[in-house]
Length: 209
Image (cartoon, rainbow, N blue to C red):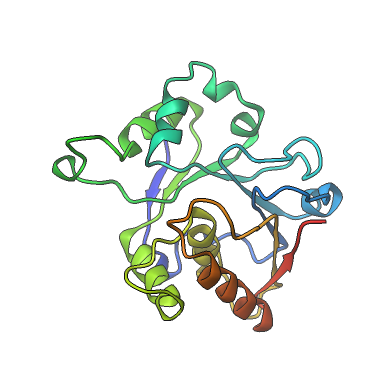
């Protein structure tokens, strides 16, 4: 297996071609199958809402949350590797760095070792986002939050992708970002960051219909 643990701040994480890139979130109401499938690279998340239907049927990179109960459920599913979005992905992204064994107790929350083993038979690249990226994400969100912000997977992956692109690249198309969900994420600050990136010409944010 080609497992890559990279440093995003040296611009070698998720350094995809500067061709059209679509990032597809899981907010409902997106009807953009043709536009998404026309992109050279298509990044999706977790259960990939709308995959095979309203959000198209292409996926080059699939981000899978590697901490918490969702990954624990997937690991217990003997048919997880048979899911269409998993089978069709060319590579995988794990948004959280691997915790040391002593940090992963008394209740296990990090499943990085287990998911790497699960994906290994597929022989596809697995990119694990680093703690450096998490620090950079918290720094960028901190002005709009109180305390220590806890970035969402969608924000972290988008940040890593933008850091890996040249400034003159075509804007990234972001679909299905609703900036809502688990209350521990700083949604307002993330929405403001996406708006700033759009104003700077780095991405185009397509809202739900």
